[in-house]
Amino acid sequence: MSLLEVRDLTMQFGGLTAVDRFNLNLNEGDIVGLIGPNGAGKTTVFNCLTGMYAPTSGEILLSGQRINGLHPYEITRLGMARTFQNIRLFKQLTVYDNIRIAFHSQSRYNLAAAVFRLPQYAKDEREILEKTEELLEIFGLYEHRNEIASSLPYGEQRQLEIARALATNPKILLLDEPAAGMNPQETEGLTNLIRWVKERFGLTVFLIEHDMRLVMKLCERIVVLDYGITIAEGTPEEIQNDPQVIEAYLGEEVL
Amino acid sequence: MRKESILPLSGFSLRQKLTWLAAVLMGLMLVAVNVGVYRGTVDFYFTGVLVVAWINVILAVSLNLINGFTGQFSLGHAGFMAVGAYVSALLTIHLNWPFPVVLLLGALVAALLGFFIGLPTLRLRGDYLAIATLGFGEIVRVVLLNLDITGGPRGLGGIFPKTTFFSAEVLAALTIIVIGNIIRSSHGRAFIAVREDEIAAEAMGIDTTRYKVLAFAIGAAFAGLAGGLFAHHQMFIDPRSFTFQRSIEILVMVVLGGLGSITGSVIAAFVLTILPEALRGMAEYRMIVYALLLIGLMLVRPQGLLGTKELRDMLGIDRVRWLKAEQPAAGALKSHGGDGR
Image (cartoon, rainbow over all chains, first blue to last red; front, side, top):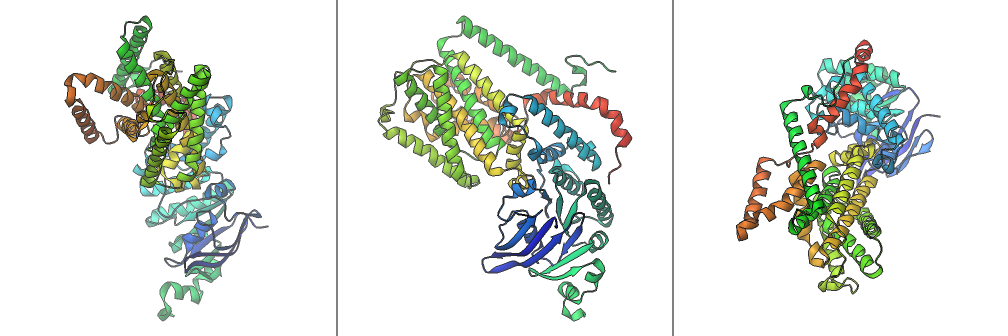
């Protein structure tokens, strides 16, 4: 059974079909890329998968459980975390708090335990503190822990966002244009980071990216979307030589 | 091993030392006031002002949970206060139930109302939510004005004066501790996450609707409690005590103290309760001076007196804890750190 199975996912906004019968199979340990020209519907796919939109039709199965119609927070708790195209950190909070918030669903104590400072509170909070520090170390953000998130350099904000997503303890990590706005060196570093994080946390990764070097280097499989329709799927080599993909990106005349 | 004294003042900046000094002075003042009230050397009038100040502390801190920490703009706090005031006053007048019980019931009814108001209105954001909560406050007032049991516009008189300086003080302290403890927990961080970015909060596994409703229910409960104290202090309540104006007054305290700072709310509640009394000498000019002071302060410090800072941050209490937590781990960090990237 695949970890994530998407069957004929369709998303319509009024008369516009943003995503048309999208299919996907993610097996454990996969690293799959979703590419396509601007406005192809890539982020819409992400938003459907993570519950930000309720799909018009189709089915999304996470570990065999149907998840369409669930709230985003429920889907996150079931093990699918994401980052955003235009970084969505808690900008005014510290690096440390950004991560701590993401451990929310892993704390088991209730309001009364918080109010009366019961043992469960201390236990969970200590655990959250330890895990937070561990994550910050792994991502090399420990020195910045008391800085306000928005004051970090762009690349580190991206890293913090990935670290924050990992704090929710996901099985699947969805990355929406992780390399956007990065220079080649930063992209290189990010490529290694994603690969390393995937191994370290035993993740399955599904990512949207415009940077072809990153996609081709990182992904085992690539899905190409154009006007909401899946026009190709295959290994990086197959995709690079697919006439339909070239046409979608560069126009017909090139061929 | 380095020994740390109880007050490691050597590690503090000048600013922190001054804050310590101010905190100690305020603490001493508080002790002096308590002793004075206990001995009866503080006059009846000023004791009354202090009771109102404590009630305002409860109102401001609880509204701060909704407006400051959770970022939901509520203008209906006087409505919740009214519910607590009337419920507890009626229970006292008709059934003569014990004071703590009627206060608790007033708070519970207000919380329930907060919960039910929260459910439908929290789909609204920003200005729209503000208008909806404003409408709620007005509905409460108009209902109170037209019911028989509430005495309509004549109000409710003959409520036993059960609120004392000490009961108000203890309950205000309780409010600060309870809401403070909630804020410094995973639940509190969820409230703050909702304020900072609702979409990101959802994506981090936080049930944002639940926390918005929860903020309203808890905030309403404490507003109801404050209402109960208010009724048993004034001995007379009528719908005019709970107008839109009242909600605004509480809101001003929260904004002035700093949205997201409990310490700020407490200080602002005290200052804004005592200031108009202190300005009484200026007769008809006093509200103008009061307004000018508010405008001036907002110009100088738009984020409020304390922004989102708390006394404990400014005293460096958490920083000390950080250091203590770090010391044993410091060596270990270096040895296996930096293998990331």
